[in-house]
Length: 341
Image 1 (cartoon, one colour):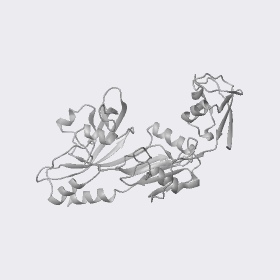
Image 2 (cartoon, rainbow, N blue to C red):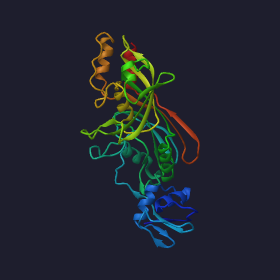
Image 3 (cartoon, one colour):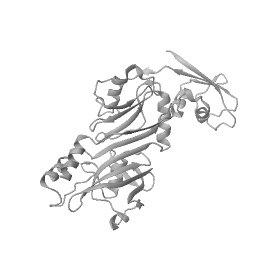
Image 4 (cartoon, helix red, strand yellow):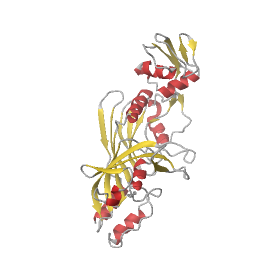
């Protein structure tokens, strides 16, 4: 199989582990993540001073000569499928897609086909130079199946490496629009008593907790305050609906990006998303808050009312600042129109 060889020297004061030392000193243009480097080490593809090293934890000295053999990307086992996509932006390294509600991002045992990855394999074809040793799109973040909106995907190892670093550093701009039960307000004594929530200037709700898998339902996430992953969500009310005000359209933005984060956090605050079958809970609308038409539209809304509306990041190769917006999809637009009417 065709391969390329990367040669470099370990700089002064290397980290104590080989994989960390390689990640620090490997040429940037090689676009090899620490995870990829660890796999290359264990496969025997890394020579240090001419001797193969297979332990990522091995020590390495300053001045050691390193040669890494990287095989050309192999074809993916995932089949391409000609599924229409709404492409917001595309170049040789990245592609930004406005994902429709109902589409899974990556194949899984329960959804082996019909996913965004299947569609991207067909759309990009030979333009995929390989991510992690396989000709596949590089998924650096996901949104839930029934959430609509913007996703950026890498088409090359270099782009994947650069985007992943931005998501890890929490520098990617992500704004969502959500329709929730209730109207969060800083003067609400109930909300002030919910652990992990507080209001910042401008009536911005900040939710800070940890998130972990639910103890009895492994498909769900749960708010915890020990033993989980740090998660921060901010949200502000854009509009309220009903008489008395019963629903709110909220703009939410993420400091971290955890599975189901917005859905879990807003439910924890007592403001679950309309239509969310997992976290929204069954809410009975006040009898006279909405017209019969509006109440019926709320009841019939069949997914969580959540849309990834804004995505901003630095292009991983050119350094250009990119920012994209996706308007609300038709189902959310129709629901809001019914509420306003």
